[in-house]
Length: 98
Image (cartoon, rainbow, N blue to C red):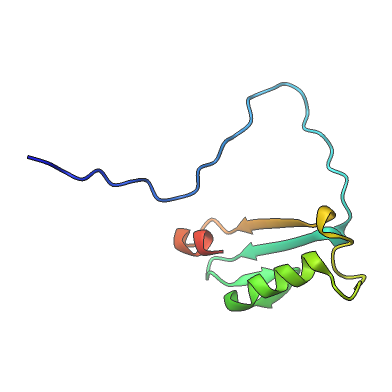
């Protein structure tokens, strides 16, 4: 008799060790943050504007590279941050896809 053991599907997360020390203060400008929020209907709110899922990758690349030195995009690729948050009711598959 044999069987197949299925592998876990998901994102492995390595959490930091517990410490009494407060976390370091992150020094960043809002300009450098590409904020992505997935709501309960699995819709994307990117930098406070609705965006379709098929345009997300293109917009993220434009934000990071900022080829035209736009003051609304990241100062440079090294300072760019992508922040992903989701609603409690977001589908797991939508979260993984984003």
